[in-house]
Length: 159
Ligand code: CO
Image 1 (cartoon, rainbow, N blue to C red):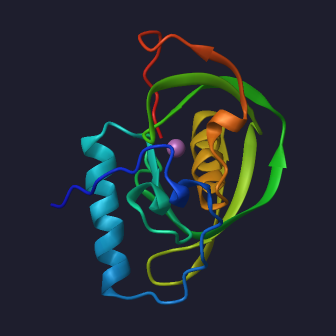
Image 2: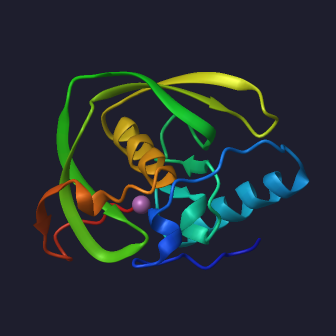
């Protein structure tokens, strides 16, 4: 088990467009595993590679529902519907929480750790977490979308 350092804002790696993953090897599997340990240790529901200083299109999400651990490599949103407004936080912004508008439903196309493409449909909070992480891969931070900030003790949702 390896806990990585989580990069905090402002760090340039958080605001850059990440590179496509082309090599699916043991290093990638180790990174995914370390990212997962790091996310759990930090009580997060998602983590993107730039948050551990790696500007590659890799993210993980686990909101502790039936989907379990979701590994998103080179993910793209191929369909989105509806909208939801809800609380959001980010492990790169400790103690900062805000209300963000997101699509209520997304269909995502991504590669798994072996490089195989798959599709995933998500609604509600899972859809929110996925959109937050994919934004990270494009250098987009949730603070650019916050409609209103909460007090630090009001909520605890981080990704
Ligand atoms: Co985040």
